[in-house]
Image 1 (spheres, rainbow, N blue to C red):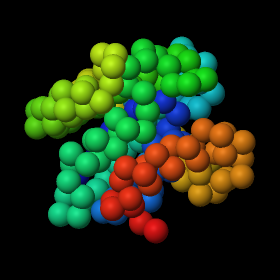
Image 2 (cartoon, one colour):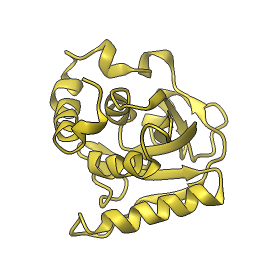
Image 3 (cartoon, helix red, strand yellow):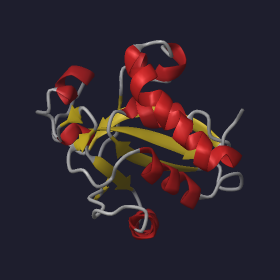
Image 4 (tube, rainbow, N blue to C red):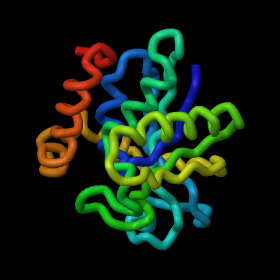
Length: 174
């Protein structure tokens, strides 16, 4: 099993897609990359902690290659906008990848290079060493499955799920 810690704006969006991905055994929403030793949703959303909203995606490489997990990441958000994803603005919504090993760092850098061809503007995804991962509050875990009728889910997450189905249907559970 391998775990990648990825930030692509609001963690609910990445969580919703990776929860439906074959070979993914766990998706945990959380915070990392900042200085606050006890971040919570409100402090992170306030933009003063330095943390990004992220997901820790644990998957089985014998079922789904690491490259597919990473290519999905680049398809599910706009990695060319600095500190912004749609209406979500601030460093907490930055495109980011947090590595624990040199091998992961290389995989992340290769994924950026591979996916740059899909974007007309430069990818600005931050690649940083993972410090401490802070698990988000329970309400944020598997958010889409719990609140699919919520407005954010309908307007923001559903189009991302549709995009994932269009390009990655072979890797998604029904």
